[in-house]
Image 1 (cartoon, rainbow, N blue to C red):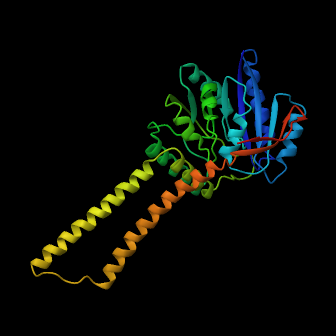
Image 2 (image 1 turned 90 degrees about the vertical axis):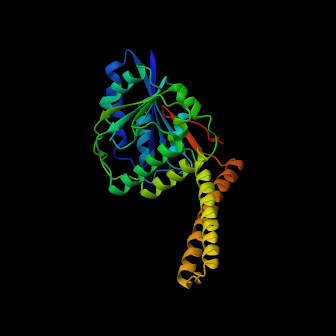
Length: 319
């Protein structure tokens, strides 16, 4: 019998998480003779009473495990915490708001059986705000350019991966995990299943544009040196432009057509190139800062407690 592990990062989902878990159990009951399952819920320091709700659920369902984090380090860190406990042959990623169409789970499993390593949802239309769509599109374009993501692939909140993919992902021990980059450095053997994203059961989304931008920086700097190469080319272009401009001035001088540049144009040029210089220095500083934090062994997450079937675990730390 094969086993499925469901990993659910929980934040602000006090009113929705029970419905999500109940639906998982209902879908799994359809093929209980072929598959067993476990559900790992990660409380990412949620400000509501989702932890209390999760404890109530776990008290009656032995296959539900709760990871209670000591602080909020972001969704991807919470997912990494969930991955650390999975024991299934396949790992299912989904959100805590009920938007993932669980009735399409078996279609995704069948696609894995066809030889793919990762299968993700392909939504016809995203049920989220314009600002969040902007952040998602920014991350999507970045991963295509910087990480070489295959054309037509877009990772969504609902996906399934083979266990070896997750084992490889867990080898990443540094802070600032970026799951899409970790998947892509493991395998390009990815497929999608078309489906319609649901409306949220209750409440509003918590993944803001600021969080999307922060996630974009993680992918931008953690898994590619292309930004540094781009900075090098910008520097070369600027130097070449300055050299050619100097040649033009010399030629105009000998032709008697030399005119002293105006104050305004001079200041614009200085400000423009100084702005580029400061931007590139900031980019290099971003890389250096992240290297420094990684050297200091900053944790991806800190687990306060693990609760299995109503039994509380001990404090646990992961570097």
